[in-house]
Image 1: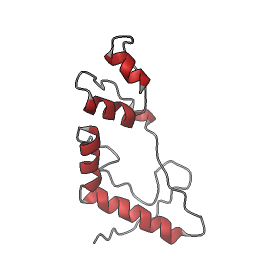
Image 2: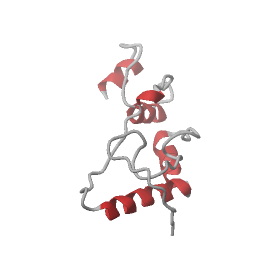
Image 3: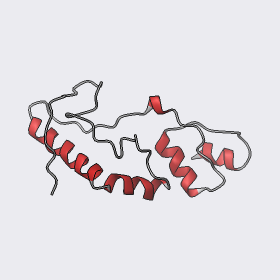
Image 4: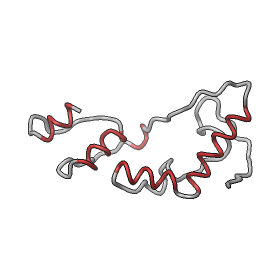
Length: 116
């Protein structure tokens, strides 16, 4: 992006952006350093699922959790962003229930993870 180029060319001291954008830019430009991460402001991504289809929601959540369990998401993150996720990163942490704790729609119902 233009902001990254401004930093690399010396026209700007720094830029702000989402962690995925900044970390990806740093992985492609060795002189660009992602040196400040505001962990408490992490955005959560979502896929819309009809409330009338809790089974689909559970299947999607289980698929993501299985990918966390076997390391797939962590490997993808490292491949694209050039660094391993933090031990407490959502790329590796399997949260209890369905959804993100503290977010609207979160369902704390315990469930057994079944991965193939």
